[in-house]
Every structure is written in structure tokens, then in C-alpha cells.
Length: 398
Ligand code: GAF
Image 1 (tube, rainbow, N blue to C red):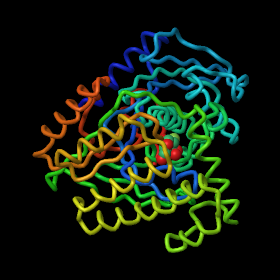
Image 2: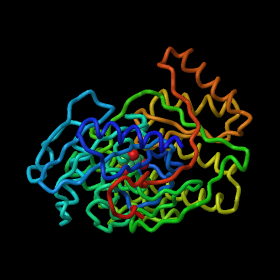
Image 3: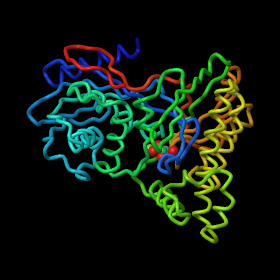
Image 4: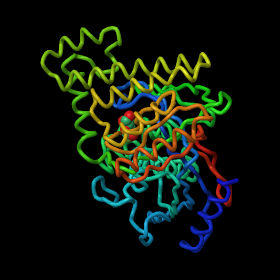
């Protein structure tokens, strides 16, 4: 119902802006990552699930080479450009995300000849919840349908990642785009980022009397900034020193030997240790969830946080405060989620403990004189989809 309302609002605004009805309305979600952080650009394992928060796009195809973009979330007039003139690195505005998708589709040989696009998103920006990937994937899904490209979810994800890596210039992995394209309601997505093979793992918190809270620390982060790229480069250095294609190729039981071979490369050793142990944590969480033991993943989440804080060094005071406070007030597990340096933490808790945990976190932030965090419940939701069929043809992305 909420989706339909949003779809109607976005379609009506499209009509007001462009003077004609859109050919359709699509949605793609933000995500939280349950476990498997900074493993995706190491060919490793990740386990995100989709949020109910989505980017919604009302879109009409054009055949005259013109691309027009507008967002309800940015106080700017409609941006107009030529699809032939799209060039990586030329756009430093929000429009680089949707324009980058058009560029990536065309670069891959798909005849996308223009579009009118109006976007609106409920995914909090800069909160580590993949608002950018949601924008990219919703646009890719719409164009896939309107130009009958026949691309599958994982192919759309690859093209969106290329848009972000090359057009926007952020060296991100493939997790967020795949989550936005491929997640299913009630499930977490166990994804092998080497070949994008995937398994939907049932993750029904409510049935178990559990809740997963997202705590947005309100500390903004950006992947285009240097620290993400530095970690990535350090991991690639580690793989090169160890003579493997990617850190994924270091098995957990070969970790000590690998670390010994890295000698006095202390920083690289820490990065390698995080990635190898994190891949193993993803596998442990999959096993526990498949055995129906959701509560038992709590300590694994906590281990993951410690590894990101101490070895990967991408946590911050606010994220650590959420984790410590939540655990001290009875949560089963907690960790930062996403790229780090701010953004959000997740907290696994008994549903009966939600008020106490929330209060404790809010009070801890107030006592430390920090901006109040935004706390909400995350329900594993659906991936990209077409919300309605107004006048256009085409089938939803799969
Ligand atoms: C960000 C990136 F976009 C992902 O690709 C991933 O590397 C994540 O940080 C860390 O796990 O969300």
C-alpha cells in the first residue's frame, strides 16, 4: 500500500514536470549487510538483506538522444543532457548516478536512446545503507524494461557497479548493487562475489521473537573519499604479496601461514586477517541460519565488529558506542554495517528488549553530547521491482 502511494506521488510529479505520463514506475531498495564487510572487492562472501526503504523512479523512454533527470530530494531544476555526450568523471553532481547507468548500458552495447526520469528516495543518504546503489538499480531496472534489454538482476548489478566505479569514480565492490537487484523479502542474500552465485537464506526475525535495529549514527560518510580506496589497495597488495588472485583464495586454515609470509607488513597483515576471518564468519552465519539458530549469530556479529574496529580500522567513536551500549543493555549482537567511517550499526535483539536497547543507545549519545541517532527496525524486504504498469510494456528485472 505504502509502495503504491509512493508510486502514485512520483508518477504525478513526473507528469507535472514533463507534461506527460511516465511509462512506468519502479522501486529498488537500500540494504543493510548482516555480515561480510569489505569482502566483496576481495572476491569473498557477503550477506546483505534489503530494507523497506526504496528509491522510486517514474520513467518514460525517449528516442531522440535526450536524458532528463530530476529528483524530489534535491532542490534543483530538471537536468538535461545528451546521451552521446555522457563522459566518465564529467559530473560531480547526484545526476552522475543515473547518468552513469545510462552510460554503462550504452558502453555495453545496449541501445538506450534517452529517457525522462523523476526520482524520489526514502533510503537515508550517507547512512551506509546504499542509497546510491538503490538509485542506480532503480534506473537500470526501468531502462531494462522500457528498452526490452532482457538483462537479469546480476547483470544489472554489474553494470551499475561499473557506472559507480568508472563514471562516478568510487571504487566500490558489487555487494550493494546485487542486494538492490536480487534480494527477496524475508531472506538474506548469501552472495559469492567471485561469480555472483547466490542463495536466498530465510531470515524471519519476527517468527523467532527477534528484531534487528538499524542505528544511523548521523555521521556522514562517502565512498569517494580516500580511506575506502586505501583499504582496497591494501587488500590488493596483500593478495599480490601472497601470490593469489584475491584474498578470497586464502583459506581460513591457511591464515596463520599467510600472515607469517607477510613478515613485517603490519598494515597489510591486519587487512588480510580481517578479510579471511570475515569470509569465515559469513559461512558460520549461513550455517547457523540454515540450522534455524538465529540467536547464535549474535556473537559472530560482535566478532565482526571487533575485526573492523581493530584490524580494518574503519569504525568510529559513534559506531563503537552503539555496539557497546547495545550489548551492555541486553542485545544479542551488534556491529557496524557498510563501508564504515560513520553511517549505521545493526543490533540484533529480543523483541521485548527493543525499548530498553533503544533508550540506552539514545541516552548514551546524549550523555556523550553527540547528535541523536536515528533508530529504526529493519524488516528483510524485496529487491528491485516494477510498482505498476501505466502505459509502457516490458517485463520486470529478475
Ligand atoms: C560499501 C561498498 F559500496 C560495498 O561494495 C562494500 O565494499 C561495503 O562498503 C563494505 O562491505 O557499501
